[in-house]
Length: 515
Image 1 (cartoon, helix red, strand yellow):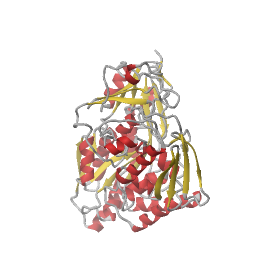
Image 2: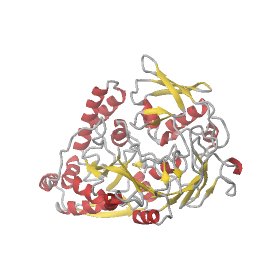
Image 3: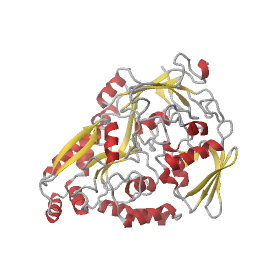
Image 4: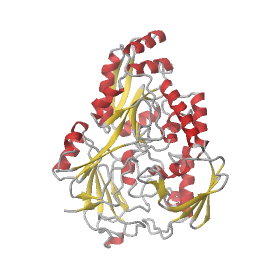
């Protein structure tokens, strides 16, 4: 999620809200209508892409979800003001251009004219302001805008953002995550975002059920494409079943591949493997508000007992890089720091000094992210070496999210997807006031460093701040990091124009079916 989930969030530490009536379909348009508005032919070149995803979106509201499954669908329905390009720097989307004042406290965005929402209304700066205000007040990503005093619709197509302090990462905060989507002001005021999805993106939502979500091409999309008539998302949690369905032609695209088969499949002519080093990370976190995990030395003991390399190999084979921090090697913000390794003797010494023995850990995972189940099995074996028992609790993702939100766990394992800026990797998860700090971590030094990093405009000085923050977070074992995975997707040879992105975005605007 979150994957947040993305939140995921991904999965990130992710929020949960029921979609519709908790499993029934939400019919948002006439199902008998053909492609395009009112059944008219759209600009698409033809064909419906059948895409298999590992779990059901938790909701339709793009501004409150942090579920990666929700974003896989909704980022084809909505747009953001800016979006990551090939090098992950921000490029125009609904905003065509922008400039800053000399003191860096005022950002002025010129918005794209002639953009239409799926309900036929015109996109203006009022929609941008309403969306951003909603995000700050009620959304899952309001924490990104601590530096913002106000959003102002200067005229119909000019958005001005007034800051109380310089924000060197403002563009990234506006565009790297689909939780920053722009929705119609009218829908926000009416409170209908959870019931229907009305964006400016290349596809519009037709229906949403427990196992199938249908999109159709939006004929009035402002950009190039789409080239499909529509997309049908099918929820298939089992990776092996997804792959079989792809190989037999029942689906055209899948969001993941069994890791043990990636290398062999890369040499196959029967399908295409999309693989890129991503900016995701996977981890375990212990409940700092429960004994004995409130003791940093106990958390550190568990970190010493765990072998990230073994977890990475078991969960992802050769499609992951072990890492004891969050940020991967491919990022400018990467900091090489690995204080734990795999040292059961040191782990046992810390446990003995803390007076902890006979410990049993309730480790919560979800089968909708099977790598968490695999990781938990390896962790169970490794912690047994130091006398710690692990009860693996496997939940469906909706229950996992609810239990995390209520703090009903000793430990959980998951991943965070779609990170770019160091603030994405650390603030919401580890600041004492972070909205996704479900483990209850609180450290004054970390708070101070993360606050400094948000306002430091010199890039090298900013990196030095985040290097210190990363070391402190690791040393205190707020998260126990495992690895950075490659992003691996697969599709049939007749699917062209699709690209696996390091940003973890799933966009089918350029995709074609050529049979």
